[in-house]
Image (cartoon, rainbow, N blue to C red; front, side, top):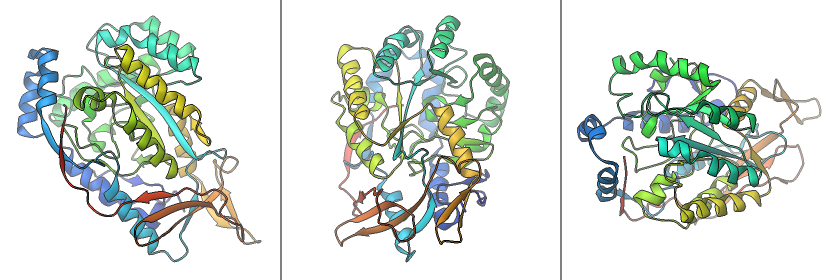
Length: 405
């Protein structure tokens, strides 16, 4: 049953995950680890107190000089995948559940943007035009109390089928400094949500506390991620699927941020995006990308983004959706259940019944690798919808990469 409630995690927020009780411990353990990791060090607390006084070029220099130990596979949630493989291997007949995505789709593809500055606001239409030309739409997360918000631009984006979300309060890095500060800013954030007609939120710098975030009037939050060692609050929930977190749906980003690739790692070829997308597709996950019009600010970076979109466009089985639509779907899936019919086949009951199929998750492979496979869970039928995820279970050597805040 997909919709059964889980026990509270370390966040004290009741969460429900992709596979329900069957593999709940894997998801809960990873989320609890991320909850413990989502703390600012004393150095970062000091940095954010002084951040507004530090010129942006100096901040970027500091970001490039910061060193973080990370494996060459830093963008893949290997530890989570290994734990999931182990759990599925313990189930002799695999795990039968409702497939993650509707209407026969194999994976979800979601584009989001955080608009951090006035310069970014002025670059929005350039990127939106590119996406629309290729048939994509995205969400634009606006900081309500930092720069002049062009309400005409927001109206135009909405009319063209884009989505507007809220990105914190004023992007000063202090939103989660203490509960008192957070609570003082909640009324203004909720007012911005209502004013923009927004149902989604992402915290600046992806600082996060799922318990505190319950105070926001949102359908979804997008402040978590599967894995990202380069954040001021590092960690990651491991999972490449949404989950129910208390009163809202959590949509983790699963593709590395543009700032990480372009600024911190000084890359511009998009290879890591493509590798991670392939990984997510094989897992029938949610490929959710965070980019910024503030950093998609040169012809070379724009071209890198355009090439990535073209490659995604050619991938079969893609469900391209706005974050609000993914959140709505995930609630429908969460409220639906599986049962055996009289003929031994699987029947889906609930609001998702007309759009989904049952699926089975199992492990195959050999001694060198484990393959997580999604298949059609039809009694006596072959697995016609197969998704193989190669999970390397050995630790990679540690390497130093520059990081950012």
